[in-house]
Length: 195
Image (cartoon, rainbow, N blue to C red):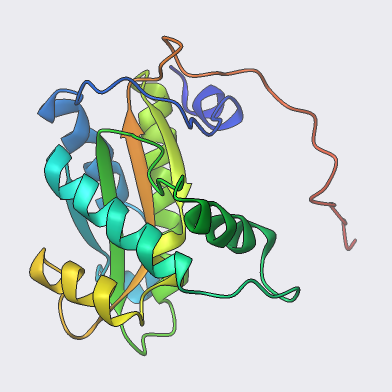
């Protein structure tokens, strides 16, 4: 797939088979993230890959339990409100049942932590699309980065003390076969030429 096509046809996938993609495909997705630009070429974005179903199930249970303890407020992101409501109902699975979860972190206090991680996550989503894999950006662990329970779990599984969770990505084979590549009309993201 040509690069521009991979960018324009990338869509989020939220329904997956339980088949873990071949390790070589996961490695290609990670490599795309590792080659993303970073401020002053710092290369401090850290990728933690979860493919063990028992570990993912444990993490999903912890995430649901911690969101269920929160109170929904009107000033929260709508997505965060939905996580809390679904968690209180006991029906929230932050990774949509995808067989691969890639947690992304970066250095605490580093001014480009989010930007560098965002570039890496975007590269990985485009690579996944080009490899006929579905993917979706996941924010829940970033929102729970300061939560003691989640932080303890992540430290046990590779997060370093001096890192903050900046995002995540789920990857897998879409339940519907190939990823949905229907291009959607752009109704936002205005463009201004300042000539």
